[in-house]
Length: 245
Image (cartoon, rainbow, N blue to C red; front, side, top):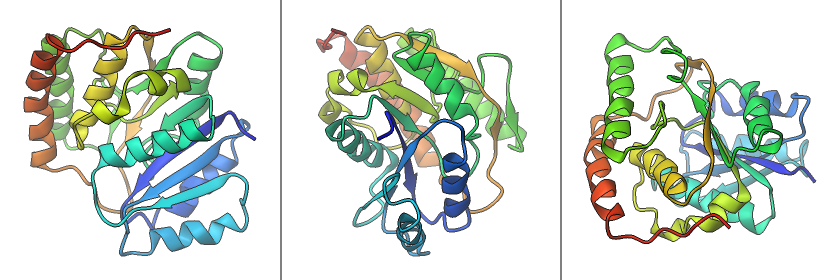
């Protein structure tokens, strides 16, 4: 059994899902994959289940009743991965915006170089984003600057969704207390790991906007991130965070 599981939440990713699965399984490192599908009407789950006959011991799927949010999808996946005793647990998008080759670099940051959380960072070495409209690049970049200022965390890419966690992090940070579902979820997870005393590092990546399928980003998700940051900071004054063992 692999020591690593990649969690990929999906909603209408039929154009990408088989290609991303095959790419990951072609890598020199042995990764397993867990798909968390939110009842995609385009048949994404059926494609995954068809591939399970080929990758029976490496590919898994959880099917949910509907579109319940990115954060709850990952929390569901985290609990499954903890239960199955994976040592390294990854977040990755299905649409090739995250280069699967970088999985090995994130793994090495944790398994070989002592990180507890490794973030695939778009902003640690300049702005490394391809094919995004300039307005979205600026919005994302300055959102991360804003989050860093308000929360006081030394993380350049606070909204990044490409990450590797050691299992101990996810066992420690009280997953049932994570409250946000959209992009603020990514901020909350990093901030909580930071407050618990874990070693959070950034690994530079190049983020490429999806070619196939439809983006899930919208203004309400962005608004949750903006106002959620203030809420997180306020709550942190009163919350006692569990500490890294």
